[in-house]
Image (cartoon, rainbow, N blue to C red; front, side):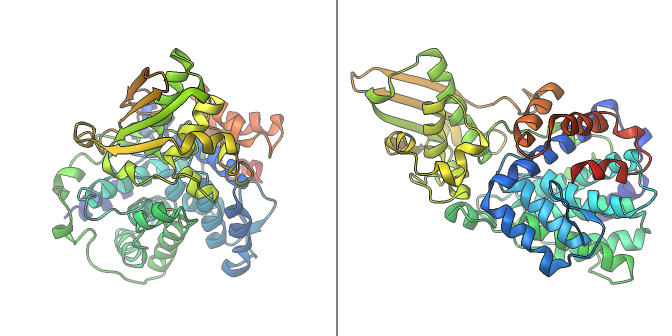
Length: 443
């Protein structure tokens, strides 16, 4: 089992060992996380999440991004994790089949804020440690995704606990207990149920991050867990030792994808295909007879024709594709509740039929492919196939792209001067000597 290697990696990884590419990816992930968190205020989920401070503990010194509230570590972790995931525009990893940033960064940021000596270099290192451990656990746990599909809250909690433990500089025994307690206490994160209902629970992100933080704090004070992690080998289709063999040498954070659209990643290929067709052929929408989307089986489940909530819209390929065709874009406000009764979108969405096809099925989860066919009333057919989109690791968003995304996601909540200062601080994060210099900008 990989635990000794994992513990050694967490304990010994340091900023000076990280390549410039890995450091840049950590900064990009942090900027993207903050962008996703600000835009989360467009969801009804945000107001409910903010109220949770009443139950988790309002008294505290931890930052809620986008709010003047300073709350307990548990409240800050739950709220920031929920906000960053609720618009579904946060980062992800294809092989792990989910989202590391919304799970790892909130408790790491909170823990760093509480440590008077935490520097920007330590924050970068803790983020990297969290991504490397968490993603590998996700790769293992979702290796049998056709039978057992763990949401991010079920696997990225290993990354949450690893990053927090790194910030706290725990002993090896406490490190072990942090991970094992987090696993036992963590949610099952039954992703399929949230997708089917389009519910606010998403992938158990808020609760997964919070229980991971709880596991570390318990371990820090002597609470013990089991002796190992990922012990359910019979549930996995991958060799655990092989997945962790490259830990500390090959960095999975370099394979992170960043989203352009506020929708499940499975919708991004058909959205892109729709935009490509509009750009190349500009078909008359009123003359469309039928739209066929060929894709892999899990994507076919995202078939809410007329979503009733923001979450259901994010998990609706017909709604988001129809939005792309109607407006030439899919922005966060397009999936807000005020936009759900848009008759123009619905008139297109109801013409969409989704089909699973074997030639695209074999590409999942390494890719999220889709083939879009727009059939016109005059029998003309426009077709576009997409297997990789802008933002995938093979076609990455540049720093300038993420800066633009940050401005688009946060402009309604903070002024331009504050936005520029946040960007500059992240760009030069290694020079920060006290993390509170940075987190004070996020309130």
